[in-house]
Image 1 (cartoon, one colour):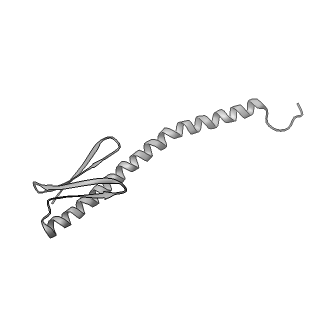
Image 2 (cartoon, helix red, strand yellow; image 1 turned 30 degrees about the horizontal axis):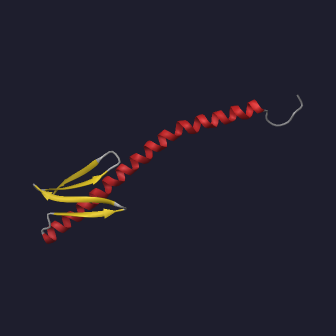
Length: 99
């Protein structure tokens, strides 16, 4: 009983505790990452609608598209509002803004 250091059961217990902590944090990190990506895409869609408003006021352009980081954002002007559609992780997303 004069041994110094950790025994094998103590090492396994420490490893199990670390695995439990990381396995509980992984789903939360994944959810947070996807939430941030969805918000980022919505922000880029809002920026695209602002650029679409500039094109509509300056040139009378009623539709167009923009590519940002490999993702296409298509916009149209109809009924006094600008709608931007884009592909999201969960499917098709859209953001409409009044003129």
